Length: 87
Image (tube, rainbow, N blue to C red):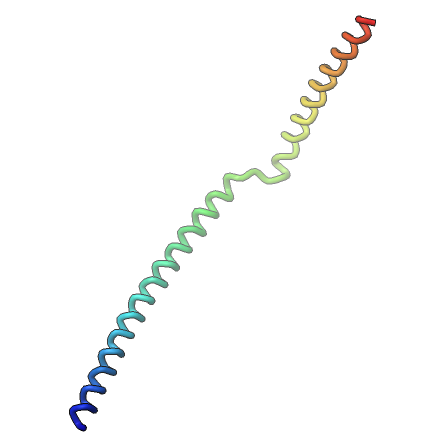
């Protein structure tokens, strides 16, 4: 009976040791993930600096829309002039 009890204690100790190793691996994995998150946040911060704000984009948008309107107006007028000339 004592041998059985001794074996049970040893089995529990082995399970505790394995659980401790698992916890150590989990702790290392969490530390790695935290470090990865910090790196990703820094990269995201750097990438956000590359974007243009709406205030910076508004003048460009106005100029481009103006040029497109001018070009389309010229095309429509050329088509109308051609139609009127043929009549």
